[in-house]
Each structure stands twice: as structure tokens, then as C-alpha cells.
Image (cartoon, rainbow, N blue to C red; front, side):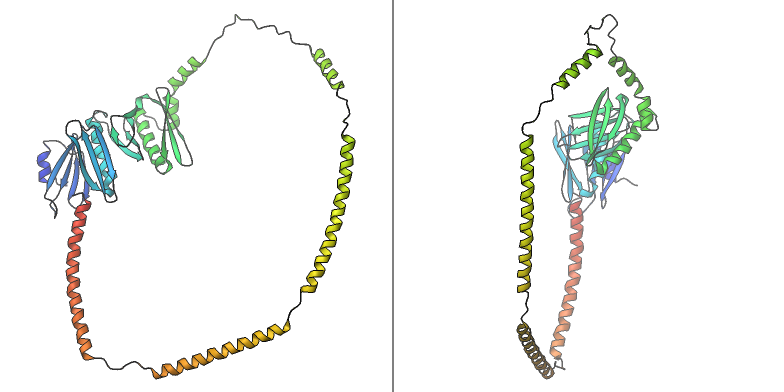
Length: 379
């Protein structure tokens, strides 16, 4: 693809590492040292090309419903920002952040940024040589952590119901990172692939076996302790088995005392049994009396049914009278058969006026759509 002349003039011999379309003819160009935002001619602005160096101390983004603002903070120039359509946020963030890492000397020449992940205030950047982690409101600033793949000796994943925990062992210390399950699989695959390529292994088991051998041996050597053979065990003089049996027999013989409350408990049980028998008899007599009461009340009044039939018949008669009256009225009302010529002429003139207005509205809609498109592109 061709590069706009105004952008080509500002490159100064640099190569374009990446370019992102922002909609219409607007584009974003990434070079090793800066980001160039190109705006084409439009109703609201002229053609322009703004440059943003990559040696920024801080990068923040502010996402809106239609636009996302990128703010780069510099030590001398202060803060500078540009806006892109909201749907282009991830496409723009990845190359811009890669340029900022390169501009601040965090990544080495030839090191590539594989993927950028944002989980609320956690930003993870997977490169070909390391994993960069930043926590905070900004996407990146000087307060970050990095884990070089050359120092990683073990990698495990702990699955959870909501998030997956990534455990990296770096210099003998485990580093735990949580990622939501929606993107955990993608992060796992890309991180493993980058780590395996760096150490030239094919699987996680092979990585943990080959790279983690030295660390495991060192941990084993440090964990073993030699107490030596110069200390004799203490003589506790334990009792003989015969003595233990004699002591146990003596204790068991002294447990033959009787319980003085046993007779009283038996009497209470007998009394409770007789009480329950009496209660059962009382409940049976109550059930019989309830049955007699129900039989005496279950009578139906035959006279009430005849009265309801008479009322229903009167209702049907009144409804039929109303229907016959409505039919008689409908026969007398007839729609007019003739149309007023003057009315037809007025309708035709109104239709012509509506067509003219529709054409004007269509042209206005095209102009409004163009304005909206330019506003969404951050102009």
C-alpha cells in the first residue's frame, strides 16, 4: 500500500514497522522511534500527520462508547494524546505499546511483542524473551515487573471456577498471576509457545524436566541434613509387656459399681408407655365424631339451581335483542359512493411536496453520516 506524501516526508528514512487503518482514509503508522497519526482531508479538518515519540514515561488509555483516547506522558513536553475509534483500541494498543517498550529500552533489538492483555488494572505483555507485568490505572509506566524467560525454571497452571492462576518460578521464587477464564486459554497458549521457543523444547513436561533439573538438584542438596552418628539415644527404661498387662487388669477390676438411677428410669419408661396408649384412644374417638359432623352437613339445596337457570335465560334473551338491534342499525348506514374532485387534487399536490422533502432529507442524511464518520475517527 502506498504511504501518504505527508507521512513519507516525515519518516526521515525510518521504516514503517506496522500500520493500522482507523477508518476512511485515516491511518496510524508505527516506526521504531515514534507513532504517526495520519488524518485525511474531511469536512472538519485538513490533511495532517502528528508524531508521538516512543520515549514516553507513561501510557494511559481512556475508553469511551465511541472513542478511545491514548495519552503519552513525557518528562519535558507533558502529556499528549490522540483519539481512535473504540473498535480499533486493541489494534492500536499493541503496536503502540510495543514501540514504547522499545523506546524505553525494556525490549532488546530483535525482540518481538507477541500479545498484549488487559485485565482491569492488570496489563500483561508477552514478548519473545520475557513476560512484562504492570498493575495500576496506566497501561504502562516505570512501575512494572518483568520475568525473563532465561530465569524461568518452572511453569504451572491452576484452574479455577472464575480465573486461572499462572505460576512462574523465577530464580527459585514462584510468581503468581491470575487471568480470567475467558482469555486464560489464549494467554496460556501464547506464553507456553514463547517460552518453549526460547528454551527449544516441545512441551510443558519437557520444559519442567529439562530446565528445572538444576534447580531441583540444588533444592535437594540444600534440603538434606546430616546429624551424624555421635549422639546415643536416651535410655527411657520402658516397662515390660507383663507390667503393662497387670496394670490394665487392675484398672478394669474397679469398674463394677451399679447405677442407682437404673430402677427409676425403668419406671419412667413404663409410665410414658401407658400415657401414649391413652392418647391414641382419645384421638380415635375424635375422628369418629368429625366423620359424623361431615355427614350431617353435606346437603345440597335443589331450589337454588332452578333459580340460577331462570337468571341465565333472561341474560341470553337480552343479548339476542341487542344483536338484532345492531343488525338493523347497520343496514341503514352505508358509505358514500362518490369522491370529491377537489379533495383528490389536494392529495396529489401533497404527495408531490412530500417527495420533494424526502429528496432533501436524503441529501442531508448523507452529509450527517459523513460528519458522524469523521467524528468517530477522532477528529
